[in-house]
Amino acid sequence: MELLNNLALGFEAAFTLKTLAYCLLGTVLGTLIGVLPGIGPIATIALLLPVTYALEPVTALIMLAGIYYGAQYGGSTTAILVNLPGESSSVVTMIDGYQMARRGRAGPALTAAAVSSFIAGCLATVVIAGFAPPLAEVALRFGPWEYFALMVVGLVGAVVLAHGSVLKAIAMIVLGLILGLVGADVNSGVARFTLGFPQLADGIGFIIIAMGIIAMAEIIGNLQRVERREVYTDGVPSLFPTREDWRRLLPASLRGTILGSVLGLLPGGGTSLASFSAYSLEKKIADYPERFGKGAIEGVASPEAANNAASQTSFIPMLTLGIPSNAVMALMIGAMTIHNIQPGPEVMTKNPELFWGLIVSMWIGNVMLVIMNLPLVGIWIKLLKAPYRFMFPAIMMFSAIGIYSVNGSTFDIVMTAAFGLLGFLLMKLGCEPAPLLLGFILGPMMEENLRRAMSLARGDAATFLTRPVSASLLAVAVFLLIVVALPALKRKREEIFQE
Image (tube, rainbow, N blue to C red; front, side, top):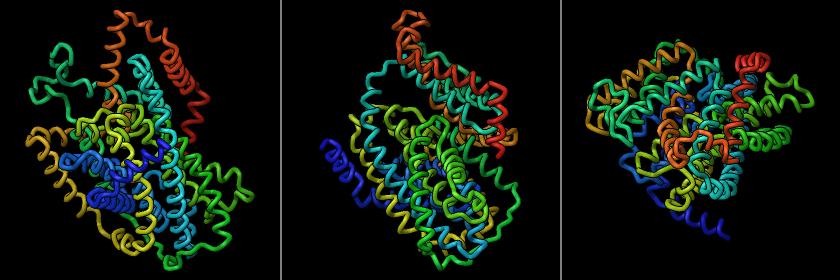
């Protein structure tokens, strides 16, 4: 009964004309940036963070969430028609989706992707509504010891699941932690790591880091890439799958949804891990695995269901624990702090209309996407032919205007440009920006909880081992580090990411 009352509150918050308009805007933008390879939801959300200053918290988060799960829909269109991943989680969709398009079955492939994403989105929203409240109640009993240990596990999980070198992932997290400590010390007021710049006394703005390291660096990197696009549109007018297609895609969608819902909760996991795992599962349980790679519709349905489910269940640790499971959730936490909302279990009690309004908006957004996506395929195809070298400079210009509008400071623009160059350099060195962003978000919170715990324990570091929950979480973190350092597992991990 309480759940129904909460959902009624969510519908009341989400079913306003303004909120529906921004939900539609978010899903359209998400689909658009999913269709256009090279931009991605992380860069887009980072670019739009200044816009959220002018919006109410519920409206801002609903729009940003729509961009995130809308990008999972849009990415499949490019993967199927152009053999380019519009979004990283759509890499697997290319394998069979593009082969279906080459055989004149682009329509059924697009329908399979849209239907699977819709099923996953609706079921994952039910998971959030059912599991988030109990988890938030548990989190309310956490003290600074448990929160610190939980954040350590989150950062270690990001290292384990990061692409490429473990050492590079650790270095990026450490860099993020250091950047998060720039500014005046909370207790003493002494400036730290400001290099003599008074503008850094309040720390580095989250928008500056996000737009520089993520968005600007991504755009600079895309400008140097050679564009090569061959669009397969044969079979698009015929959107309906056959009866045999339906028999194969519906069970695959359910399996992908279940797997993606679980993997979306993991720190450092998210949509890419979910889609790869779902494809591997389908191939292993298939009666004829040799069909995969040649146009198997399950190879489209299951990964698309998994990445959409993961994109939505990743909101659970962010909303209930205040712990971001991936870079996009770190940006969502940044959007909440912009509006002076502290992410964590108290969101549900202090801002119930935000929590339940966001959940209800996911149902609404998924309905919008499935109605909108298939009829607009023709428009997306035309957009795919637009040269990016004309688009990106305009994006950079509007980004600079957005940064300046926040504080009216040219120093912020210079800082963003500097971080953009740093992000591009890190990209060329093969370093992922996501661990840096997680470290930047969690660093100040870890410091605060560490200080509180040590203060209550009178400086005794063993206090973390005397409390069962924090001791167990720290043991998990140490175990993960030991396991990922084992030579055999390290080689296997590199093989998986290479594949």
